[in-house]
Amino acid sequence: MSEIHFSKKQKTVAMIFYIAITITIIIIIAGIVYTIADIVMATGKMELFLSLNFGYQIAVIGTLLAGLFFLVVYFFGLYKKGRTMILRNIFRKKHYQDKYRNRWGVRIAAGALMFSIFAIIIGILTAIIYDTFTSPSPSGERTTLSTIFAELSQGQIVLFIGMIMLLIIGLVFFLNYLWYNGYYLILRMIKDLEEDD
Image (cartoon, rainbow, N blue to C red; front, side, top):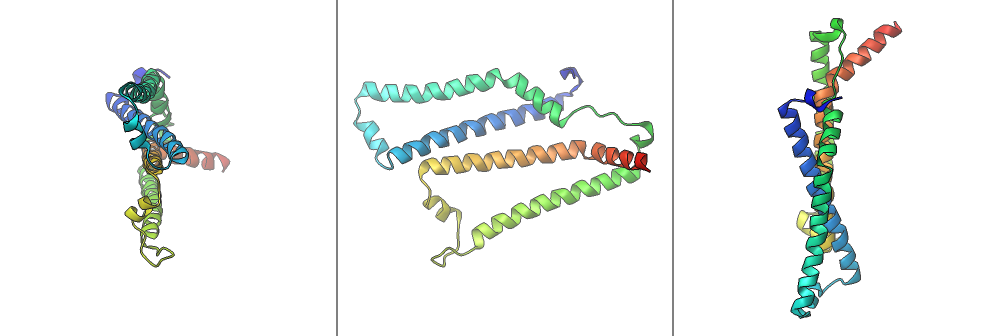
């Protein structure tokens, strides 16, 4: 499938997805590295860094920047392949038989089904978030974002934020896929059922 078949809007959506995924993966990797540093040395990392002479400080900063720029260059090199993969997964070309192309009943059913699935997913996520922040802790206090973060190290907080971002991007990707492909999937299901009859 040639990329020429994709519209400018579709390419922009794929680019946004790819950049968001790239930033999220970099944050997750930073969170993993930071968490390992927390395990090795729970406190006093900044004090240790400041106690080093100027040359070592430059070397440490250079190492961190080298790792960051390596990841940026790596993901930049994969940009075209990554964007194409997203385009082919969400906006794949669909072939409709003429008798199924403009059936309003199917369009209404597909829209209602997709709306129901969206409602289920959003409802479950809302319930999980509500339960997380309203359930009492062992001490009897309500759990809040600040109490959750208070129990985590700084590296774990960065990792937690990265994982939440990845979850949100995955959800948005899935909802986009469902939105652009739901009608076609329902048409295929109806076609298969009619052929079985």
